Image 1 (cartoon, one colour):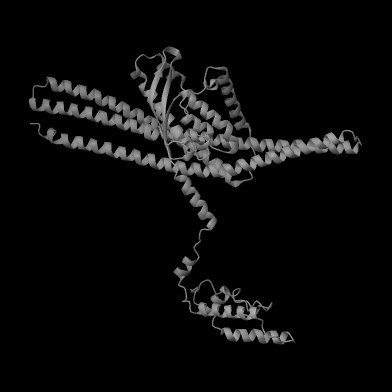
Image 2 (cartoon, helix red, strand yellow):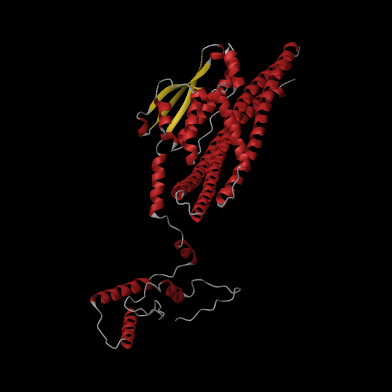
Length: 505
């Protein structure tokens, strides 16, 4: 056996690649092992002569084996391969430290490369949805809004590349309920649909002039468009038959009574949501997976911070609208002063300043709209998306609870069976054995469901985090570009007006 090397003191400067022979000896120790001999304890170095090494091994075999035999053809070929290995290895230059570090960089496996390729190919399929032309149908409290849903896609499963259908708001909610019923138990995060607004829609129904409710209708239209695009962005949801029918069938869908806030189904749905909320508060489980424990804390903290940011963004929107209104009032006051001032030069400058304030009011209104639609609504949407994530986490807890309850019932059934056997009640044992088997099957099924939703939820969260970063980046860049553009316009207006103010004499 080779002597153990004593590690050098830690305070000495050491070149890891100084001892060329020793390092190469360790690296190629298994590569140069003699396939004939089982004793590989003799150390070898790359500086050794291959022929000499072969002779030494053969001599050692001769000493160990009284019946010396000539090597076979396969053994000779093996020895020749060893000679080629030594010959090629000895000519290699000594690696520098940087080169050695590069040589140890991890490489992607063929399986990962194939998986990345599949992901890239799936990303080549695009689908984009726009919701346009909100139209009021009917009068009074029976009135409702109809939206045109336009789809443009290159997914072959849809049959055509573009189509357009008309849908009402309850149709969107009905689609969301169907997706929740089918996919939430599988760990799929279904995007939240826009919430109903009874007061807002009542104003739309009772108003005779569309301008009075135009702001509410536009906000709902934009929210529905974002909801549909988030839904079809999910690879599982966009291939759902209900989603395809919703986007492609140019017919009126059956009215979903469950989406009506004042219907019996709507009231039952409200109580169901209250029950789910109570279940979320009361249900708990001892988490054995650290990933879920950390992710739950992250989601809760994220929800708190995004809600605070959303409140601040709403205040910003309100203040910008107030600032725009004040600019309008200031412009009117300046125009009045300019009209009664006898100083011609000053009167002209005041009139131009009034016009400037009107221009600033328009820019401020545009910025307020950008604050709302580009930034504030993004935060509101993700408050809903985080709520959807928490719903799936709660579903996982419910499955864990069902699994453990089934295990507890199985234990009771087994104990009952043992008692029957001890009491020698043979006529009841077959039924007890059947119940034990049924509960064993239930336990296995619930455990599989829990493991399935846990695995799916990890994948869903990876996609959710990636999409969240992408959405925030795109919206923030868009928001900042509009903000800078508006600020540049403000500066340009003031710079243009400054010479006018200096010209007052």
